[in-house]
Length: 193
Length: 272
Picture (cartoon, each protein chain N blue to C red):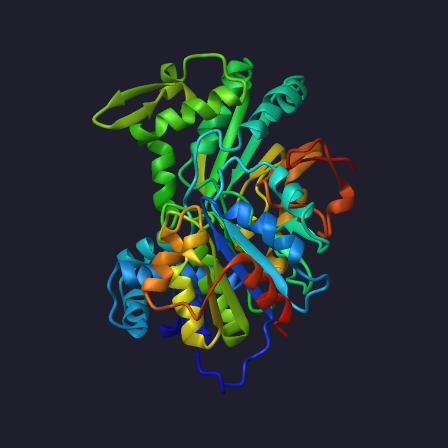
């Protein structure tokens, strides 16, 4: 945490979560400001028979426009995007989303690592990533990539996580800049430029 | 891992593939393609990208592996059961009124969806008057379609999908289990015609009543998607059907006004 470093503006916030992460989002999303100057991408481990009710549920918790990603859709600031069930979510150079139905990574599709690494490639230091509750190693590789590129990396405080393994795994691998409780996450995100 | 390959390197490799072998991957979605190439470099333990490029250029046997690995060949039987239920309930009864049914599975990979369709047709009593064209750019996956042998450990999932799609029979009556493999019944493959076809460069080769191309367009950029959709339009008879993957759409495409989506599934009917 070099305090003197000029912090690059956030252009994309990535949030990865697995078991126990929905409850966090239900508390976090209502605390976020309207019209954030960056897009938020949610990559959540979910059942492969994705029903659209998760989008509706998340949407009901925020004033920001929330939708499940469609193939080749542009990434627009202020919107919240949910990775579709059973596809990996990637980002192209022209800042559009693309989907991929290749092998599961970390037993997961969508995999948090896949999206974080792809976003890191495009957004580099202007990407910010947050890892939430979960019982899987997914996400740590992607966070490592973002940290190395100069982007900021955040983890849910494992003591507040229903499943502490996932944030803990990232923290113990030295890829996390800030460990935050839910109210701190909201403050951090709202003050990000 | 990502940073070891530059976009310029990928361009060089894609040019080689086109110049030497006629495979054109330049309009594939770059993010996914690059991920596949990085994955292959690490799977096959190439010390550098230059070594991969050299191998692809000079070893035709390796080229086969390369094409098979950078294209995604993950598929399953009766994937998205509600889609198959709609084929069963809404589409096949209409196709059944025709004297003859031609179906094209474009980018069929190892053929799980082709065999799923054959089962639907058989149960509707239509298989005998149908032809299923199964095409892919990749000869080695088509060899698997020809054999109709799939891993036995997948069959439990496929059986669940089949039942969720409205299947009433015991799914295990469709295959013979042997040494961890399930061999699908020969009468299912009798009406399957297998051929290589590259959606990037090949043209229309017949007129169809139904074209299925699910989870193929996601790997293409917008321009190539439009080209392929035009190809499908040109290959469909009037009132023919086009079926895409659950996250693919005709919306925003040049042909959208010629088609009408029939229900919540990604199935469109050609209306002009």
